[in-house]
Amino acid sequence: MLKKVVFVDRDGTINQDSADYIKKWSEFNFLPRSIEALRNLTAAGFTIIVITNQSAIPRKLISPAELENIHSKLKAAVRSGGGKISDIFFCPHMPEDGCDCRKPLTGLIIKAQKKYQIELTTSIMVGDSAKDIACARNAGCGHSILVKTGNYQEAASRLTAANLAADYLAADLYAAAEWIMGL
Image 1 (cartoon, rainbow, N blue to C red):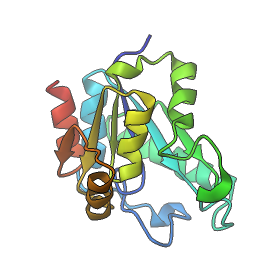
Image 2 (cartoon, helix red, strand yellow):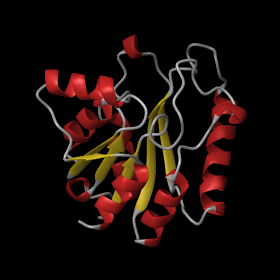
Image 3 (cartoon, rainbow, N blue to C red):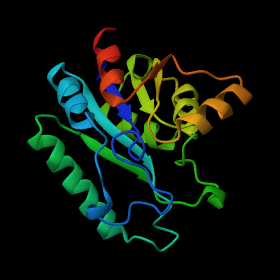
Image 4 (cartoon, one colour):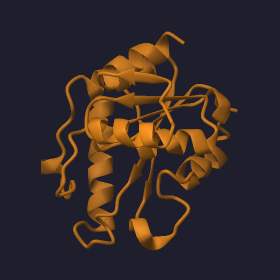
């Protein structure tokens, strides 16, 4: 059973988010120090799994093949930087579709948990939105970290309104990784 797992949101956490969605690799811009953060987590023995909502697919802004291309290049770039993303789970649905995989629901984490036999109580979720923090809580993750990159301001307001809080507030993924490695 895997005990050292970090679930990481993609847009706004690893790379710059875009109101127009990330539709091709040329639009994918790593946030500062995110590759180093993933390298450090990998070196410390953590399994990294990306958990991401990707409604650009049903909006017909990106094909599943192009999303796979982006994810393949993301994994290769992280690998060339010394890190490893073990897997990427994504929700290809619209918010109103009623699926169980769109964060803050837990379908993606549960799918990963079943595939890799993950001990959720020792896992950590890192993200930039209230949905990420709520997903971590809903799935029973041991810790959640909100990063100040991406949608932080909106996330902070939504979390306060929902009477939820992350276990740690980090400047970015690198600072989150430092905190995780100190646990």
